Image 1 (cartoon, rainbow, N blue to C red):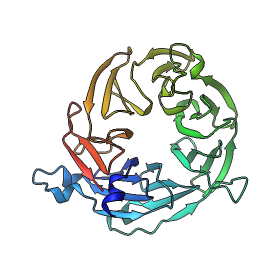
Image 2: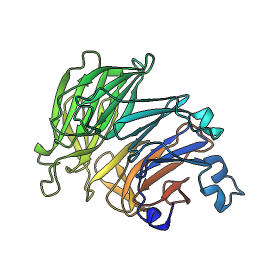
Image 3: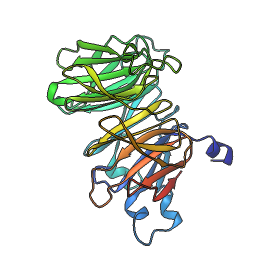
Length: 323
């Protein structure tokens, strides 16, 4: 890859291997890079350990979503999902186990897939993207078994509350929809931009970031990042972060968020922004916490750069990995 491609690289997605020793990252050129965290974090690590142990082209379009199970890495490109074996990837074998396409209405349309999440309740893969629908892939039988219809524009993000058998989705139409995963029916629709405390009409109404933790939901995008109680369906805290937030996570008694701006925001549940930690990329798309391994417990963030910042301590960047 030449200097021009590197200059214009964006990292859109990340996923840690089940053992927690590897990190996979997907970029705008359809490539997936696999990094060895154990090598990069070792006391005698060199600059070479901050480069991928493996880079391969997985899709034609950008890799907007990556997700790992106990054995597989799922990747999503334009209109398709591929499954890879982590065992094979660690041996540098890059043949997909399978590639599947949701049942799109027209064979001509190739909608991008923006988000995927596993629903452990029925071992299915929940997929959201450019055709405004959520497609449910039964992982045991390898078939798409349901389509959830209701969004009027493309879907940016999906989340699962497995205790409640609920799927949540956020889209360009400004809606967060809550679905019953058993009946495939929409049970609630929250139009976040219609709540005065969250609305930012000068930016937009889309929802680009959504995550849940039992009875709580974080969402944001055009509207401010906000914390919602899902039993009362009301916002309890609104975070005064400028720009659009693209990913957020609950971490201990805090919330970590990334989006427009070269920093990770640390927020308290009550709504205050406690700290903003500088990062290499000028704008961020993805934030992941490695909970799969106590030995390699890190936070990694990526965005408008070929660099992925690694935090061993949340208050400062330790080093960067790069494509």
